Image (cartoon, rainbow, N blue to C red; front, side, top):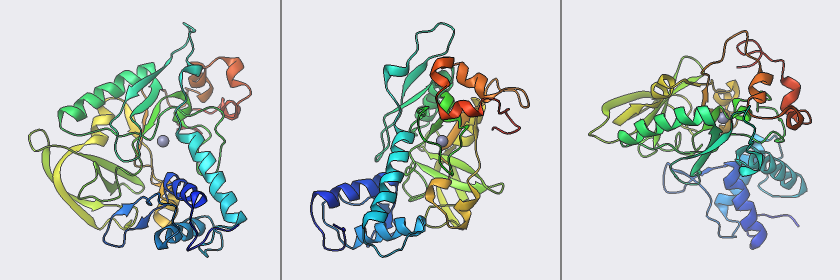
Length: 310
Ligand SMILES: [Zn+2]
């Protein structure tokens, strides 16, 4: 049975949970905040608006009704993201002395973000140094995950040679920035085309007063906003510890999915040599060949850093 305005019950609640997880957001009636849906099992106007938003982003008939086609698209997106974001547990920790291990690092819970991030052991060490510096300035580091499961399906818009597979990348919580620059833990500024600079909100004793311009939010992507407060240049801090940012997907600035913003992504490029290091070698630093062979990323093992992989 289709779910639509007026529907009630457990199926609606599950739908609301799915929309929140996917990150479909609608503007709250009373203000500028992008807020998750309330999980009340009541298909009201906000749930309907979120469904329409999802349908528009996926090229579906935007009627606000969840029939079999929309439900299928929702489930597919949910499954992909769930595999993407869930940092697997200890099962893939390898005791092989030849290889580096994955480590569970603390992150600061914020909203629906995680309180942990799994990273390769040497990367974990550099991450903890960043975390310490951010805390010392009165800021926080949120998390949407680090290591990505090797079996996570490769989809359009998600790199087959992502640094997440090797435990070299982390994502800050997607909704801890670009939502409300007056309150979020991070304020995101557009610079150099598709690159962003991320500022962490800190305290008055440890950070500089800054007037930020060209601030971007999911809802206002024109880089016309401003924000002021006590901020630490988080992008610069990460860079001092070997982490680099990546560009937004071009579609983000042509009205595409919020998931293309990528402001949250930082990857550790320490030790990689452009034109020389391969994706396969990086995978082999953490996984055995037998583990890798049946997985999708292994197909891209010959990709070279700075050439066809970055
Ligand atoms: Zn990422």
